[in-house]
Length: 347
Image (cartoon, rainbow, N blue to C red; front, side):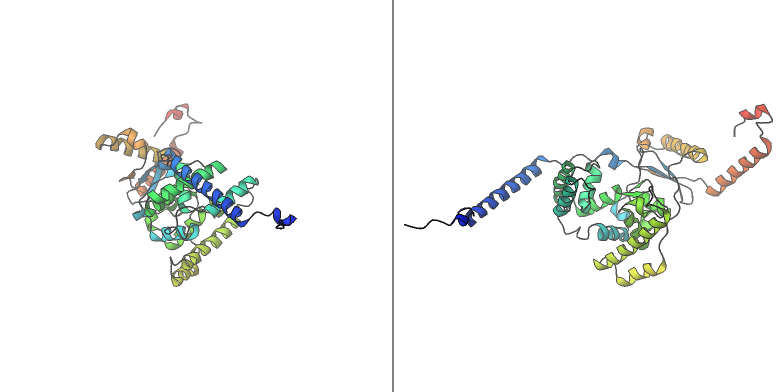
């Protein structure tokens, strides 16, 4: 009679059983993914991601104010208006393989899911496509369910959308700090210029704010770790890293990167409230709005939805002179504490 297996080997599964079990679970996983892709539809873009502001300009081309279009400061621009330097900086820093990958980073999502399961903070680990999907189609909640949706929708978006359209969508929906959504609003908020006029150095800085504007705005942020000094130090380090990263992934020559590094950090201007329509500015923009409605085919409701660039003939210098003249006359002649009737004087 044949001897039976030893006690140890009797409990060790055969390679056929192991292989069969693995293939079975792999087939189930593929089936689940296939069903998930079939069931999950790319939703309609969130209204918030499409919200824009109207931008008013003085006669000399300087920005007067942005307003309308809801609470978010955003002006959507086509990719042709976003300089290559900005595109290269963001791709190099956020997703160097953007034009070659499938649009998802399963390992990055897995790390985020494990971290959430442990009760820790989430890690991004997301491709540009995933971040575009999150900004455009999903809410900002940090849950496993949202991450799974992000994965499936990103796969579909990556298959159906042109990469340039995804990049433009991401650059126009990302948050750069100072209330600015999209690179056009960010270029105005930090450098008071249109996005298409950004230098490669300024682009590298704006790309650094995507890593967390509260910690990278040199003007400081909220919390004890977001002081002006700490933020400036972080911003300079990230800015230089992005320029060197562009060299490493062949999106900038070494000599050009060194040229920008040798110059100096492109310190942004101090923050200004871009959406303040009080006083003279509010009066002038109301005049412009009334003129547009009366003399064009644009209705008041269309104007209120935002997305227009309104170039006026208002002269900044003359408006300032008028304002100073009124203030001077008011101070010299209008004394409401001495004469009761002066309380009712209006200019």
